[in-house]
Length: 193
Image 1 (cartoon, rainbow, N blue to C red):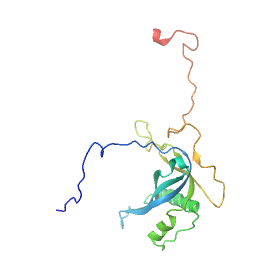
Image 2 (image 1 turned 60 degrees about the vertical axis):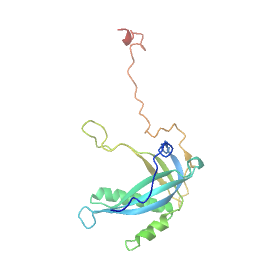
Image 3 (image 1 turned 90 degrees about the horizontal axis):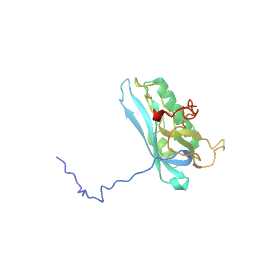
Image 4 (image 1 turned 90 degrees about the vertical axis):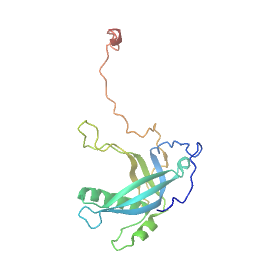
C-alpha cells in the first residue's frame, strides 16, 4: 500500500473555519482562470461533454479575486440541453471576442485562448424551474450565475459594480396585497379572542 506521504496536524488553529459571504448580484469584469472539458460515458449512447470554467472577478475592486463556476453542455443526449449549452457557450465566446470553434481544433488550444481574457457579465439569481416536485417546491431551485454576457463589439455594457438594491441573493419578492385585518378595519384584535 502507498504511504500517505505528508503529515498534517489537526489543531484548533488549522481547523478554524471561515465564512465567505455569497457573491452579490452585479455587473462584473471577470476572466476564466481555469477550464477543462469534462466527458462522461464516452462511446456510449448517453455520452456528454461540457466546458467547465472557473471565473475570477477582476472588477469591482471590493470583489477582486472572488470566484464562481459555470458549466456549459457541449454535447448531451437531450437535444434541448445540448442546444441551450451550445448557445450559452457561443455567448461566452462572443463576449471574449472570439468566433467559432471548429471540431478539429485542439481542446487545449481552445481552453488556452479563452483563459485570462477579460469579459463583462451580469451575475445574479436565476429563476426556479417551472417543473415542481409533488410537494410544490421547484424541481430545480433558482441559483446564482451568469445572467448576461456583454459583447465588446456592441460596446453597450452598463457600469461595473454591485447591484444597487439590497442584495440577499434571492429573487425579488412579489408584492401581494393582503386582505385587511380586523385590527386595520377597527374590528376586534384576533389575539384578544
